[in-house]
Length: 155
Length: 155
DNA sequence: TTGTGTGGTTGCATCATAAAACCAAAGGGC
DNA sequence: GCCCTTTGGTTTTATGATGCAACCACACAA
Image 1 (tube, rainbow over the protein chains, first blue to last red):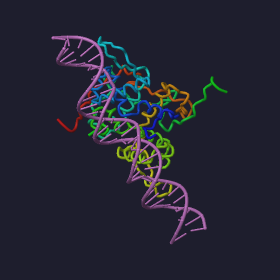
Image 2 (cartoon, protein in one colour):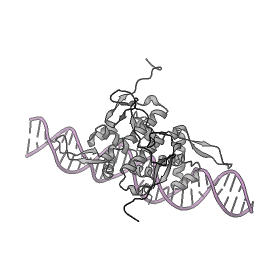
Image 3 (cartoon, chains in turn blue, purple, green, cyan):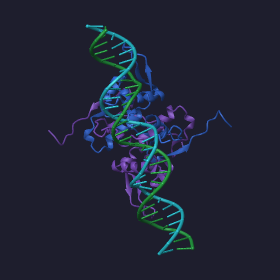
Image 4 (cartoon, rainbow over the protein chains, first blue to last red):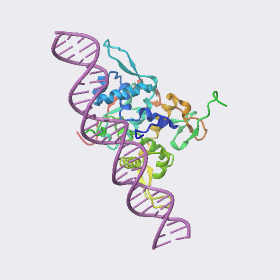
């Protein structure tokens, strides 16, 4: 097959995430959904994307359990797309992408918005990686270990 | 043009990040690079991707300032691809993707590796978003503000 | 009944991707 | 020197994905 390679069977969790989120539109759709967008037309208008692609992406996100369709909500007989907990769980990914752009973008002056703490109106801190005991970790302080085998199912 | 939409001029920092990293392979190439992979053939072998695509992606990552080519390093006359600081700055993105998969994947038993604190061998904590003063923030505790105008350049 | 808005699907042209063939330079054996 | 292999790509060609526009279906209103 020549089709776009699938990472579904890959053992790397990063590849597995990309299988669901790794195309050009999915994360932007989720971004809008996190802002409260729920309706097909609203996604289409805000993102300026083709309707067939939007329909395909929404279907894919629903299939992956990131969005689910809700029957109505404002009276009209149409359906809406709302984030599942899994979908809301992508928030750190979006924050990480945003912060990377804020830190390294070649034209930071073109960035329109900053993410702030609602209570104080001050920018949020950079995401930081910490050990279980709270020590701050750099990439070099980490390593990969094979996942422990599950206890229950086999010898 | 029908070509794949570019987010380069978009004002959203997430879209701007995706412009550089948002295709199927770039983040996986960066993942390998973070593990120390430097050579064309090694990327190609580990990722199992077509060589033309790899060449195109490496070029794109170099153009975006994420990788740079180094003349040699092990004696042979070939070039290597090493991460720039901007490239190493994607680490939180990869960690966020990994943790999302670890938390929400439908078949977590297929995930082969876990990211651990090298010193203790224990899993790293989930990335958390904090305010400047250290308060833990949930998505609902944040909001977007327009970026302040730059001081220097204009009235 | 005819409009109008929302929420899609279908057709077609074009682009990107993937696999494999091909190419070129650098060593290595002899 | 000569052939052969390894490394690092480019070219070729087929197919899947994308983007635009046109079309369709349903609900509701006049």
